[in-house]
Image 1 (cartoon, helix red, strand yellow):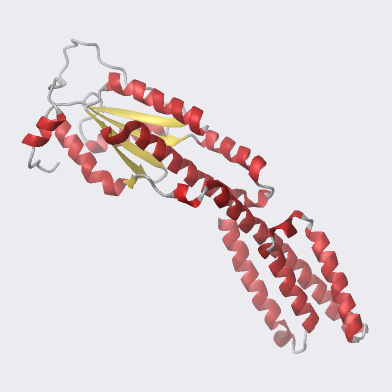
Image 2: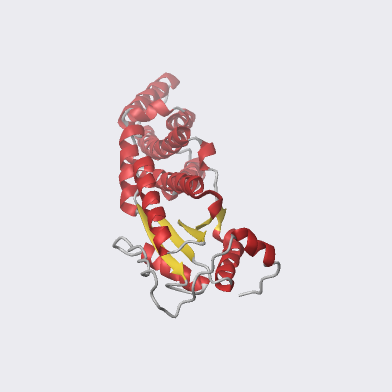
Length: 313
């Protein structure tokens, strides 16, 4: 996307330069014919995608031949001054075609990508981390107050698998390598939304799912280390087989590994960001005598019915 923005800015500056060239030089630098051809050469690669399939040299050659033909029909002299003007016009046409072709390739690639993905698929199916932070704090307070287990997951898309997905889509749907940056941003957004949909479909109402920058923070209430392991393995399998994406997952379990929200989040995100696959938490042996509080068996409905006002953390 940055490349496209830079190209559009550069094209705007180029148009200003060409438009005022005659005033700066004190004499007409381009003929009316040249201005008309420049406008056509700038518009064709952007407005008509099939033009980009041909080499820019073809459009450049046709424009130069057309320009010389119009000058000949218009009766322009080919003296030294006339040849200088033609040289300036040819350079202006070449630069305009180059910029327009690059911008057209980017715009057309982005448009093709949006068409193939479907804009409706890019709607965010989960809330942001800031929006869900209060609910996460509430779950941690409940877990601490009633001595219940809780698992916090940090989930991101493996960068290598995303690159492989992008490379495969490039070969299948796009012809211009110039649009790689724009494609990467859009495909990443699409992949994140597809992953969010997978998380909501698989975990449903049993989890709080939020997006924090380029990864997801998921809280599973009443879930210990033994229960969270098959959940993570299933999410990885579904993402790999259904989306073609590997997942980097970090897990922190309350109260086995941390007892505050900040500590849980830091541990999960640290494991997620590790270069090696994050190890899943190891369940403590049943009957093990530890200083950790035992888990009280109580239903969620009983907790909500008796917990009208919960003190702040």
